[in-house]
Length: 137
Image (tube, rainbow, N blue to C red; front, side, top):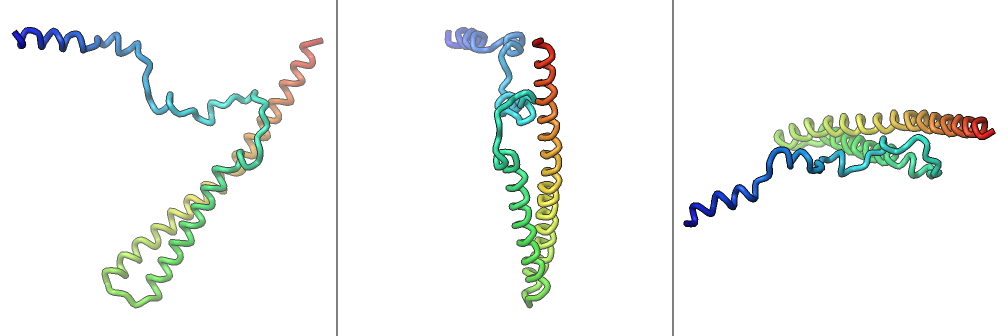
């Protein structure tokens, strides 16, 4: 008797593939709002800190990691340590150097991109105001 009711319970709980297609997907793209989805036509003014916060943080963290890598690499070549510690420091130091340099350069490249984007946004706002001025007459 319980064997007969068990398959019926499973059939009720299962959803058809068509019903699964109708449900909204909960992917990362639908849960996180991207900065790219921001409209070009928004007129809310943003402070410089809001605009340049991410590149500044990336450059700061990259600079700190770069300095940490420099210190570790210098210690590896100046201190007399055991062979095991020396080999580990000689591998880890340049790794931090390259990671820090990469993050620092990414932040430095990001700043002109943001400036160009802001200039384009200002130009778009100007053209929009001109268009609305001439079309309302």
